[in-house]
Image (tube, rainbow, N blue to C red; front, side, top):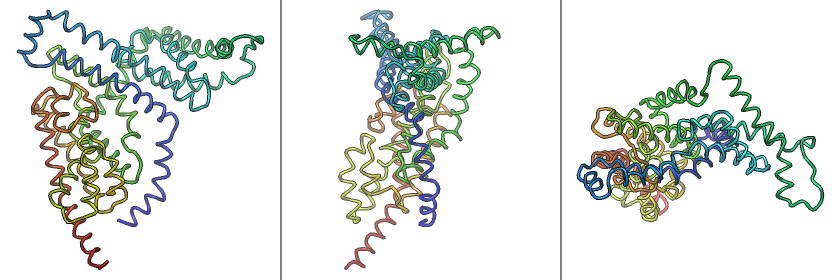
Length: 417
């Protein structure tokens, strides 16, 4: 194990760290972090509108009228999921351009204009999300290069307010960038593609979501995050751009299917991982905390860290365990830390696929305690039961390794004496 860790530190970690700090991925990740409260709110109002309790639905309909009370959720959806692609187009361009030390706000505005020039009016919600990402990235690359070109700067006379001078400095770069996307749309139109957003969604985005919805892909995602975390890299942040690009469209499609009386098509999404896999954080470390309380009471070091980590762990914050226990570069914890999420994702996926648990259609805040999160994500008691079962499984997996760590700790204490 020591030789493996040394090999990974020398050959893998530097490359992985470089990928994690790659400016385009960071821009996408930071953009989705900003929109997270909106997605949570949009998901919650959809949950309120579609809570599958007949008595609740009948009561609300009789008191307020179906169209009236459900209009609230619809209004909030239009301000959250309904404009998600527009927000991402702005934020990605803003964050990436700021990384180049250029005018991020102007780039964000130009990106929105470019998105609509490309036909974004048909993809304001999550169905235009992938195109919005591409537009944001490309706009930032083009705009950040043009805006520094002296030949494209309009020099304003003295006395002109700085804000006005700044906007004119970006005039030609903005015109060129937006015109490029407008021309792209015209070229596609000449070849018979009248709606780029819908065509891209049908040909690329939807098949990609379906591919990412398989058990092998879910297992891969369950493996990557803890594997990177073991070496001190924030695995969850590194795969966040991928998770979010799958997440919002999958949730929206699930809700739409259920409202139409169909089966929800996408099992794998962020609430699926948050509610059934990442119990206590990456690696299901709440199970480790419980296992230490039950089986590792004589390990003084583990017990102290666990006491301090219990409260954050209930709310899925596990950095104290990662670096305090530690789990990072801890050979004893390597196997259970990697194995547990793989087992949990397999159990959760199978239970959902067999219809034992409804598909996740709501996105509770990621700090929602386990079991409660499972109930809210699926709007079903079965979701809470599945989360509880997975928590027990995580305790069972961690238990023997906690015992091994305790035996090793006691031996070290004897040698010290």
